[in-house]
Image (cartoon, rainbow, N blue to C red; front, top):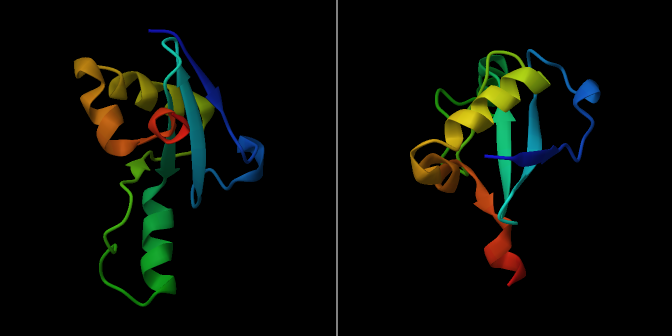
Length: 99
């Protein structure tokens, strides 16, 4: 399946080991999703910052070991398997907000 990625924050501006980034995804059928990609170190830093031993419930994060365009593409391709079930779980569907 063809898709386009857009990074509202340039990927070069994030710490690839300890950060998170929003990724906008447009599919060939026109549907659009936003994903939150993070790293394990960033999850630990968020817990430490809030003095918590867990991650509070929120929008689901997609976790990669390092924020790179290649890792994000691999993740997106895995989310597009199984009739996009996981994309619907991990991504915010912007198409429904626009209509």
